[in-house]
Length: 162
Image (cartoon, rainbow, N blue to C red):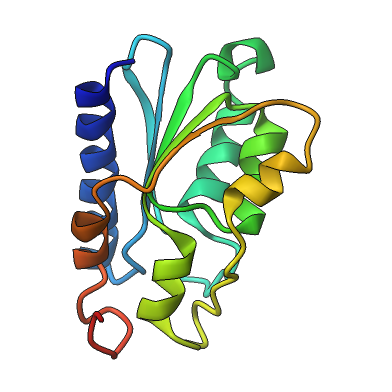
């Protein structure tokens, strides 16, 4: 996949995150693309309506992906995430077997934006650390377009974007 394709698909994840916000959810989104760059699935954040703290876009998308596609195919796929996957979501990506990740805003920067918000007590743990503990390789590209990713959070957490 070329960088322009990665940027276009990452921006599609941003659009999914913006759509999540219009639906009253936290502004996170994820897209799963096949080896040819074709979008296979999109997922908004799923915190509401049930207040599911594990309803992160990436985790929900990985549940859908690994129950739809075989592991060999998922190894050739890429997940595009509006923000760096947290430890839980990185684990879901690892266990689903997706071979590549492209993300926008870093988890460290997200923590600075959300503060200690009760609905997003961000873990400042890089996904690279989570994946490095595993037994299979996940290619990681990011942060990319971090300013665009951060703009999605403007006003979402009740504190100004630094």
